[in-house]
Amino acid sequence: MTRSDPSQAALVLAAGPRREVDAWVAGGVVPVTVAPLEGWIGVVARGRARTGEPYHDGPLMLAARALGPKAGPGLGFFEIDGRAVITAHPAGRRKLLRWVVWEPDVGLLRPPGLELAGPAEVVSLAGAAPRVRDELVELLHETRVRPARMLMAVMATLGLPGTRLLEDPGHVDSLPGATDHEPDRREVGWFEDAVRDSVRLRRELGGLP
Image 1 (cartoon, rainbow, N blue to C red):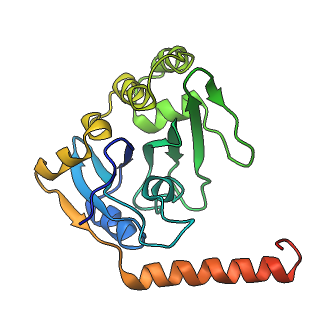
Image 2: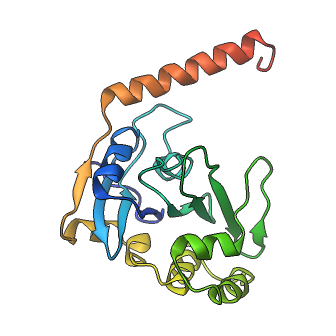
C-alpha cells in the first residue's frame, strides 16, 4: 500500500462497532488503515485517493465523507492546505457533517458553504465533560502553533486517543488489530461516474462552461 505524506494528518475516530466502520471504509476511495483505539475505532489515511484529479487528495476526500449512521458518531482530525480541520459526525441518519477550520496566525475561520460545529458539539461527541468546552475555546484562540500540533492539543484536551497518529501515521501499523484497506475498484468507478454525471448535468443546466 502506498503510504501518505507524513506531514498531512488524517485521522477519523468512530464510536460505532468495528464491523460497521469496516463496512463504511469499504465504500470509500481512499486507502486507509483501521485499528481499535481505547473505546474508538481509528481510520488513518495512507495515501492518495484512487480517484483522478482533482479528487486525488486522500486526507481531503476522507474529511469530506460522513460516517455511516451505524459507524458513528465520530470526529475527524486533518491537516489540509496548511490548516487544522476537525469534522464532527453526529449520530443518526441524514445528519450533516459539521466542520471546525483553524489557520495559523489567523485562528478560527468560517468558510462559506460549510456547516460549522460549535465547541459544545465537539466536546459532546468526544464524550468529554461539559466543562472542557471552555478549555477548547481558549485553545482554539491560540494562533502560533502548527496545524498538526493544534490538532494534537485539541485531542488531548478532549481526552481522545491516537494523537501520535497525527504526526506519525505509520505508527498505526504497530497497533494490535490494525488492518489495511485498499479501495475497491468498483467503488472508485462508481464515484468517478457520479462525478462525470454531475458535471454533465450542471453543464446542461448552464452551471458550468
